[in-house]
Length: 263
Length: 70
Image (cartoon, rainbow over the protein chains, first blue to last red):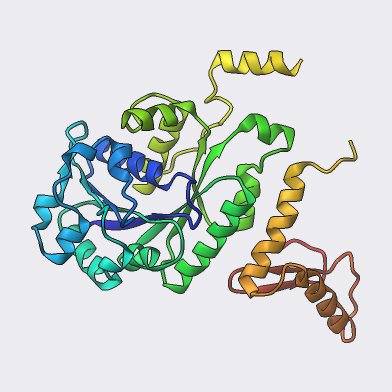
């Protein structure tokens, strides 16, 4: 029986879709059968981040409305065995599906997949309610900024109210140079305020932008962000993985140029 | 030094925001809540302002009166 994980944040632009793509690709590399569902109706993105936009025939709304069979809408990712995408509909809006329909769909997928990842839209309206309807657990993505953390706190409250108790935190786009200067909240600062378990901290990494340009997840790039995402996958599977030192993630030259700049 | 780091400003603002979101009150009411709880409790038990602390989680309001960490 699979597990349904919703990836959510409240605020937009903090990295939900990138996180979904990388966790999906990462889990599939550990021999897990994974399906990622883009639940952001009208603003389809996950297919683009994954580089699968040209393979879309049917979408989530087609499946829910019964215009096609579930199997016809699932896009298999040729680069990652066991990884599938159910894309969103670009021309429909959030009212096209209901929480009950999502719940039915995810419980059907649980029979066949180890993990069902739901990329949640920003906000707390119906799109959010749809995405969390069938979720067994949640991963909150935030960045070390006041507005993103505030929204994350509201989302955690809403998840608790919806009886989703297994909620973990990912802090994205951390810049250790700024943390050291006292100009960016640290992982500890954020975790203390939100008081939920930390499942990963992702350094701000150019490779993520490059990967998105190319439609490639960063997990196989060997970059700092890629390693951080792979560690998150292991923790999702229940393995105990020590948190990496984010300073190590920086290459020798960037550290050197940083030192020179400081002096 | 003397100048407050931007992180400590961010944390102060965020703590007030999060508490006000959690209990649905205005951010500046948190200080008042603190003061009035202190006033009320001090009528019945011996407390000092240094040892007194109110923290609001999503489900509870914790009042610390001994200054000791739990």
